[in-house]
Amino acid sequence: MTEFNLAGRRVWVAGHRGMAGSAITRRLARENCELITATRSELNLLRQADVDAWMADKKIDVIFLAAATVGGILANTVRPAEFLYENLVIETNIIHAAWNTGVKKLLFLASSCIYPRMAEQPMREEALLTGALEPTNEWYAIAKIAGIKLCQAYRRQYGCNYVSVMPTNLYGPGDRYDMEGGHVVAALIMKIHAAKITNSKTVELWGSGMPKREFLFSEDLADACVFVMKNYSDEMFLNVGTGRDITILELAQSIAKVVGWQGTFTFNRSKPDGMPRKLLDVSRLRALGWSASTDFETGMKCAYEWYVANRA
Image (tube, rainbow, N blue to C red; front, top):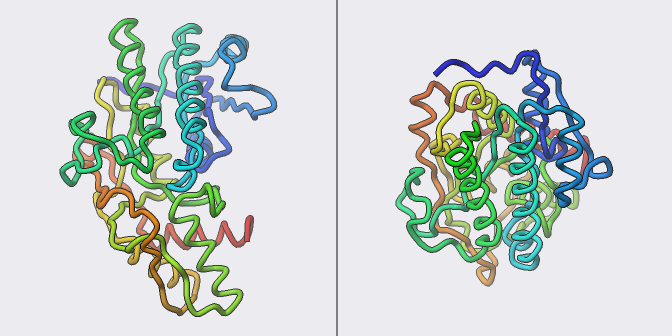
């Protein structure tokens, strides 16, 4: 298809202060577009009328929909209503307003938790809705599945040029460093850095340490999103990842190396492991011409340096 040109467009990154949104914002600086953002105090994404009015006033041409209520296993477990309600409302408000105000193209960011708990590995896009979800994050997953389906529905009924991408687990600058609400990489960076500072000899890992996960540097995700926005228009969402996975223990050991901590990991097996494995089949996106370029150690050093400078 013909490349969708971002030059001269008014581009809104919804969720520009989050890890994914901020990375997309930085990546768009290399495009000749007019970047539009709004803080929570400027725009309440939970109010449809506010979103409609703001988008009409700003005359938005393009949207990267990265806004979401996010968190790890613990946050999903103790705040299921928030995770389901707020994510449903945010995505439906923005997608509907995009149609209402004539937005030219929208890209929606989903999550790898949309796939069935026991999906065949690596997980292909066609695995969606073929089995039961992982209970520890089903609330968030259901909301993200609804977002994908909403984009498909508006494409079918109204001819809207809305596409979706499905990123694997992210890490990088701007991650949420919150022991109760953060993802595994951020939580482990916090734990291991604290162990280094306090000269602690042990760090506890949740579960067995054996589940396998794939990790994508946030700047690579941003580059993929811009690539997809410019070069793809179809109903099928696209997996975005590296095509490689490691165990949680291997992740912790890699972070320890970057942090410069030498100690022993213990395992709290009373805590859930989550899905046994989550590895994406990224062959569709690779066939279009995009692959992740940041090696894991380089990306992790960048993430850790940002944490020390901004949050530690």
